[in-house]
Image 1 (cartoon, rainbow, N blue to C red):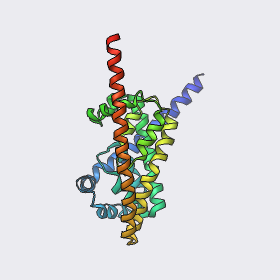
Image 2 (image 1 turned 90 degrees about the horizontal axis):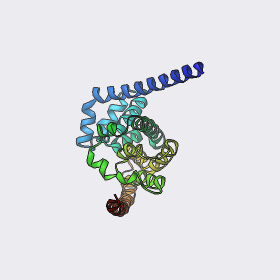
Image 3 (image 1 turned 60 degrees about the vertical axis):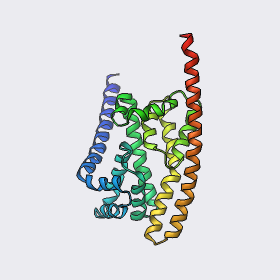
Image 4 (image 1 turned 30 degrees about the horizontal axis):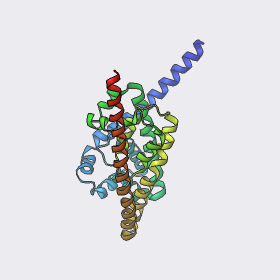
Length: 246
């Protein structure tokens, strides 16, 4: 029994060490190269400068981009699209997609685990209270997994905010990682392919690609607003019905 306990503690220590190392490297990049991130936040059109920044590292640029993507999951204020565009411009549509997807998966795993460990106080350190209240309906929503997929699938919605809040719901971690990863595929793939096409000079095809995807996003956001409004109304109605009984 003692050996098992000792082994479990060792495994936990190794996992925590890896988490600390990954977050430490990502934080170092965030602090060391803050001007580049500031440019992206203020004007996402500075994508060329960001691409040159990634390429300046040479082969290790893949790791740098991966860590930046991990950092972006934690800090939703950093826009994801320029990072994905740069990935496509630097490494092509497929490999750019692979790097971004891996970074998102690692970041999501770390973030989800930390929220599950430290709860709502950890979320409040990164997310404004108004956003937390806005998605309170997720806590008791029926068909939670389906709703989670839709939230990650619709372009333009704050997916990284959902990661914080989804960890507060009863959803199983393994199923959440699969659902959120699949839901993100179209958005990441379209953006990295768009970046690769821009590097090839295919401006028209890129514009058409983003135009179609943007139209899908607009429709999706309209549907999302209608659905969430109805769910909020049902939640408020249920609360008003419970109050007289209490």
